[in-house]
Length: 144
Image (cartoon, rainbow, N blue to C red):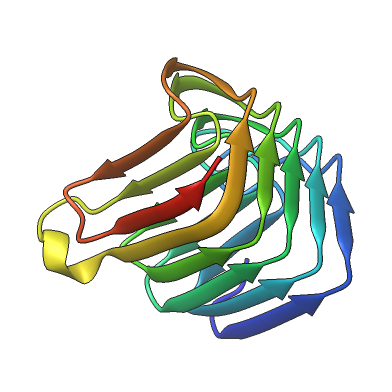
């Protein structure tokens, strides 16, 4: 678990398991991930590939494939200012909500700003869809 600032570049995180959250990465704080792949990770309750809580985060030119969690099979974002740019979310699974990307804020929607741009979200499975922004000030653009 990252509780400070983490930068990850040109990496592959695969077949990692967490019983709680964040099979690949569980981050509380600043997170920057670029040109990296998250493959076959299991995030328990939330965030098969990444579980991000609070802070600023950027996910750029990354691949999330075949990750699994109860919520947010590919990526789960709680109360973080997050930018997802030029990434691919495919064949991820969530038992409950949002197979690809799950963004949420419990009490105050102004604290979650999530932007997803030029990103492909395809073939993800969940009881309730591929992408979800719950109580957020977020934007989704150029998603295929």
